[in-house]
Image (cartoon, rainbow, N blue to C red; front, side, top):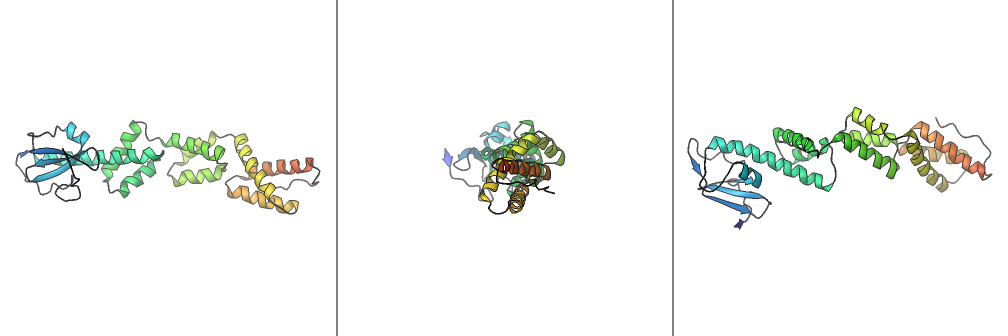
Length: 245
């Protein structure tokens, strides 16, 4: 039978077993499913209540008539928090891939203990649901190829997401200079066409725009050179490309 969620009361809180009697056999008198949150059960030991996740209930065989001691329930409380932390992490990952730092921050914000956070991260890595190296590579590829962001921009984004320097270097190392130049040129060409004025003014504005998008000096110089050559082919300009330092 489903019952309303009673986890808001201190007595039903899975961590609130401090008032349970010491050195006594505690017999489970009822096991009832909560309506919310899903997969949680209220376990009654007479007047004493606690709630646990379904997986924890099954693991520890918390069935009506079974007997526990308070010290055993304390172990179950720890296991339950770790399971809740894992479920919270899975829900967070369901929306989109995350980094280790992002999952850690989420669990900390939800008030989970450091031990539960650590075991959750280990479990996610073991289940191959958390992989900063893969995340960094996918992020770099998407941002530089699809979103036309420069290497420096992506590097800063990955730093903010808690990715280590070595993993960032590996991820960016898989993006070729040719691919970055192609993105830089595509962005630069659009900006160039939107910019009016003299040649030097257009080069300055376009170059500054590309730098703000995280492209380094070399791809910016090459892109500007190609853009000016395109203009020269039209017979519109007759000047040497500006050395964008």
